[in-house]
Length: 217
Image 1: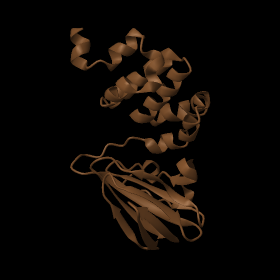
Image 2: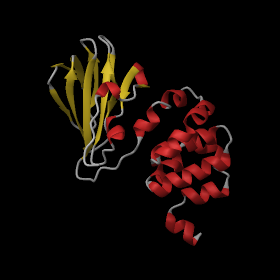
Image 3: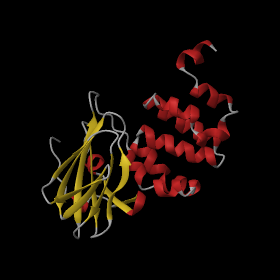
C-alpha cells in the first residue's frame, strides 16, 4: 500500500506522564523514516510532558487545532493554530492548551543518523503502571501487545518488570530478544537497577558481557 489516511481523533488516546494524552501517529501509519506523534488536551491542561530531547534530536511542533502555550528553557511562546515551533536537542520544553481541544503534532529525528523506531508509543500506555511499581499489572495487561509489536525497547522494559517480580527466565528471554534487535541496549542493561535481581544469574552475566568477552571468556 503506497499511502494511508487517518485523523488524529481516530487514533488511540494514550494517557501518559504528567496527565498528558498522546496519539501514536508514527506507529499507526507505519512510518519508519522519522518519529511523529500528536498531543491533545482540554483548555488549561498540559499538552506534553516537560522534557529535553537527547543529544542530536531535533523536533518541530505544529499546532493543528486550538492554541498552545509553549514553555521552552524559561521562555513563553504563544502558538495559535498554524504555528510551527522548532526546538533543538537538550532543550527543556513543555506546552499547555490555551483553547479547548488543542492538538499539536510533533515531528523529530536525530541529526546525521538513520531513524530507528524505538516503539516507545507502544510502551506509553503501560509506563504509568511501571512508574507506580505495578510490574505485575504491566505484564498481565501488556505482554501480548509488547511482544506482538516487536520493538526492542518495549521488550527491554517488559524484561525489567519481569526481573523485578522474580520471573527470571522470562526476563532473560525478553532481554535477549531486545538486545538482538538493538545491541546498544546491552550497555543500558549492565547498569540498570531493574536487573539487580538477575546479577547472580550466569545467563544474565553472559548476556550483558561484550560480544568479544563472551566468546573468549
